[in-house]
Amino acid sequence: MEHSNILLTLVFIICLSTSCNGSSFDPCSSPGSDLSVIPMFGKCSPFDFPKPATSWVDTILNMASNDPKRISYLSNLVAPKPTLAPIASGQLINAGNYVVRVKIGTPGQLFFMVLDTSNDAAWIPSSGCTGCSSAVFASNSSTTYASLDCSVPECTQVSGVSCPAVGSGSCLFNRSYGAGSTFSATLSRDTLTLGNTVIPNYAFGCVNTISGGSIPPQGLLGLGRGPMSLLSQTGPVYSGVFSYCLPSFKSYYFSGSLKLGPAGQPKNIRTTLLLKNPHRPSLYYVNLTGVSVGRVNVPIAPELLAFDPSTGSGTIIDSGTVITRFVQPVYISIRDEFRKQITGAISSLGAFDTCFAATNEEIAPTVTFHFTGLDLKLPMENVLIHSSSGSLACLAMAAAPNNVNSVLNVIANLQQQNLRILFDTVNSRLGIARELCN
Image (cartoon, rainbow, N blue to C red):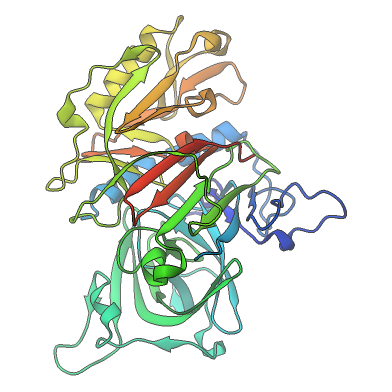
């Protein structure tokens, strides 16, 4: 993918509070031991990228144009002391909307790895990689590095493994990511440092070759539910619990946070069940039972929302999709009801097909997602997005691309901003609470 496209995609940069210095007040830091979220182009950003020439809404439109690739990808996927890390809004690649500051090896080598709730295995570009960025892991500089062979249990837990029929050799695997991008990697093990926690013997892939432009340039850290994910490999360290709060895309200085482990999580939080799909074990399914627009419960055929492990249908919470996407009939029903409750002409803007004069925004209806045991009334900033001139307001949702045989409804990160999203995999629950992360 072109470098310009890389700059136009949202990431969240996680850096330690101590990396952003200020003599008095540092708006990029978090209070206490929380990890701050810092905008890609903020004063504390570790990336030395030029400031974008376009407005933030144009940036969102560019990012949202890559959502169909993400939907296609998803549709084909068959500690007592918390670790805290800063999260920031930013732009990097089409599939990477959050990155976490991670150190690999001994001594630690710094990487900004994409944080993905719909993937498990971690991987980073390694020295000698063909097609990788300039930021690569030098395994020969780490005293704790070891490559893994086909005899280790972890080799059976990654997909796309290539092992010799006779004898033993290095555990090699091939994976796809995004749309049309692939990579090959060697399964390895080394120390992973995340926040103030050191995790020895963490299994990940050292990427050898890359094809396509959707592969995260500094690697990926999976927060999915499978055996190779961060939660699975750390076992009792984080007790299968994490949460994040994502700041508004318009934030420049302000920080959100990622919290790993049960300590420090909100105690009074509404929850709904997390559902498991054995055919798509990495994904976080929830039972979306309906959608209301204003006071109207939108008529939606139950089978369009129903969770069905055999087909993969249902609704997931995903950190890598920018705007919420519903299967076509569901979106059309929501959109049509929304249009009924606003006045004036309707126009389109990029991925958004329901735009109207911003002067009528005060009468725009709210949108509520109904889950089992939990109703989420979206703040208006999570419902509408405005044109760069400010003259238009648009419903910030869309249909799944019609060229994808998608059965998934995806609750995306724009609809998650300024909310604390809690994942408790042990107790199979997902919690949502209002929290101003800015």
